[in-house]
Image (tube, rainbow, N blue to C red; front, side):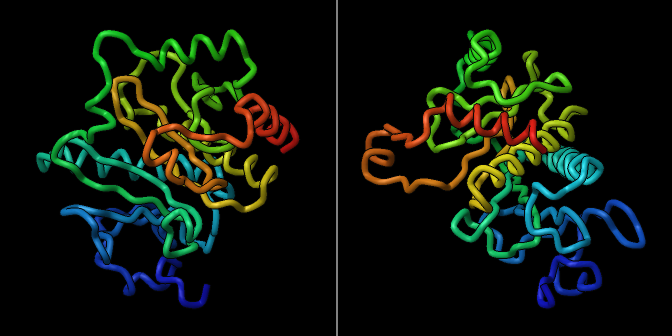
Length: 250
C-alpha cells in the first residue's frame, strides 16, 4: 500500500492523466498504461483509496467507472478507433500486476474477432436470456433491466454473464454503470462462496452487449485449449444457486 502508485497523493508516479473525475480528492483517474501492449492502452484507477477488490466499490463508484469508460470510448471514436475493449483483471494469476482496483481500456481500429464473429441474423443472447429467465435454474439475479446468468456452456466454475434483458447495442450507454454495479455484487458473492479468487471480466460491445465474468478457479489445459471443450467441476445450476444465496445474504 505504501508503494502503490495508484493511491491519492502519488499522481506523479503515473503517466499524465487523460481523464479525471472529481476533485479534492479525485474519484477516478485514467492514465496511459506505463507498459502498453497496444498502440493505445489506458488504465482506469477506480478510486483514490487503496481498495483491493472491485466488490468493495460503492454504487456511486461503479457508476463513475462506467462514466470514465464511456468518456474514453467517445474520445477513441473521435480519433478514429472503431472499438474499445474494456476489461478488469483481479489477482496476480488473472494478470493484475497491482492490487489497487483498476480496469484497462485498449483502443482498437476494428472490432476484435470475438465480436466480428457474431451472426447478424439471429441474436443467440436474446434466445439465451429468454430461456434462462423461463427456466430460472441458472439465473442469479435480475434488476434494473439486467440479468446475471451462469451460462450452461461456461468455461469455468461460477462463470457469469451480465446483460440487458432487451436487445441493446449501446454498450457504453446509460445502463453501463448499473451493469458494473451488478458485476461488483457478483464478485462479492463469489468471494463469499469461494474466497478472494482471481478473475477476469470484460465488456463485449457487440450487437447485444454484455459483461463476461470468468473466475480463475481452474487451469485451461490441452482439452480446453486444443479442442475448445471446457470441463466444469461445478455445474452451472449449482454455481448459480450458490451465487444467488450469497447475494440474498449480503
